[in-house]
Length: 349
Image (cartoon, rainbow, N blue to C red; front, side):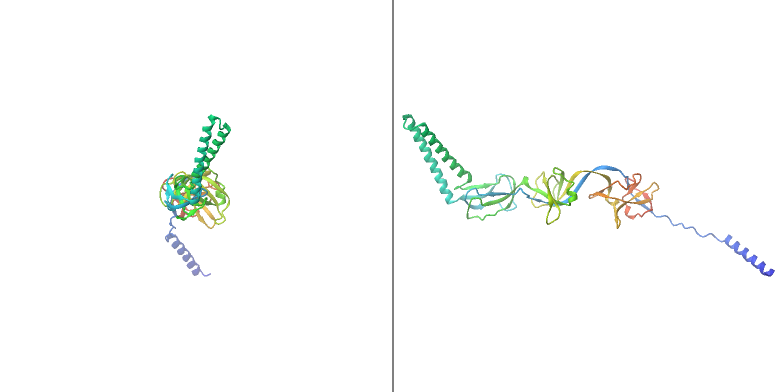
């Protein structure tokens, strides 16, 4: 290489070096690391009530009674209407005498009168030894038999006018007979449910029903309004309902309820061990349920969880899989992603 070219190359390299040395440095990447603000709760395993919640309704169940004629009679009129609430002793229907039964009643009354007269006659003959003590005993027995026969007819209402009365406080469910006609003995006049016999019925999955036992406490919330009513589990079906595919569970309310009323039932079925968190802490994606836990530096870490119970505001999670030293993100958890930096605020942070 000729000397002149060598000198030029040296000058060019020196110039480039000076330009790089004197040129301003490239600006640093000052983009801030994303930070999400969340509330948190500590991981605290505890014993909590196992609550089973389900919709249901008030039904008569097996408590419905049929009030029937004990002897033939005439249904004059009803004094109530279906779905009417009644008090104990309240009149339900007015009955008149059946002609045949009225004749039988008259015969029984005549028979008693004759038996009374016969016994009196025998008793009058006894002092004169015109009748024996055996004769008097026979006459006395005949008198008792006639009195018993008459009392039995009167007890059934045979041949009499009377009012059919409610045996207890309750609800009229049906009035099957038609007023105005003579009805035979055994005819159902009124279908009636005692207030104490109304029950709530719900349907549960087998796994839920298996956690129950008779006597479990419950609360009924009336969906049509009114104060909650305490109740108790009284029956658990042994098989699936053919229509719903669920296990029917019946509960007896501790206070008056209305037949057919819709209710929400919450049963306390023993205890469970778990971690209680607000519902907003529990997230779901295609992989399942999860929460975010925050390590000591506030970094979010996904943790898959098992849901033991979910209520209106809180959920209970199995403690397995959760780091007891890290808190769980609650309010604001939806905005997190794995590895995100967080700042905490609010109660429990």
